[in-house]
View (spheres, rainbow, N blue to C red):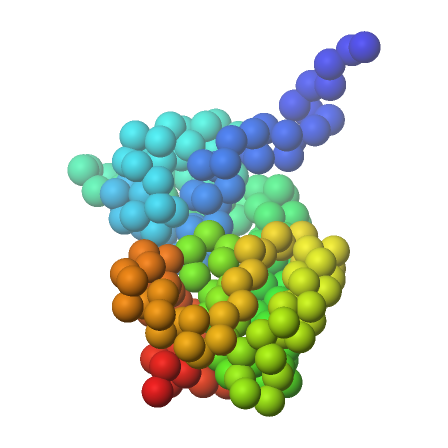
Length: 197
């Protein structure tokens, strides 16, 4: 089988490395550009990997460096059809879908849970209220998890705890729960701290 050239499949090269996607996504958020180090921080990659991704993406014509001297800003190259006609739309749609998925989690929480917290890569902590027991919420959450994966391509790890279990695990120093308290995105109806009271 003949290998297709980059001419026929340019997106293969654009998305050939996860760092490319991370850099492009970060540049979407900063339309006026970022310095190399600031871009690495925004993309959450080390400086060397970011610099390599920028060089490769620049060679593909989707990013460009602007300015003179030591600090040059990296921006998306809006003259590129790949950027203008494909990438901008794809990343905007990704953001829209993320907001829709968060909205569905909020809706689940408002109906069935005392608290919902998203943390880590893709961990969802649901705290069962008194009106809905832990076992019932677990069944509801499993169906919801499968539905979310099918609709949005997001695979969540869902943990359901009662308020008593939550308190006990925190007292035992559960690192995952401490991380949820510290870095979690609260999706309601109560915050995780409020669920403890």
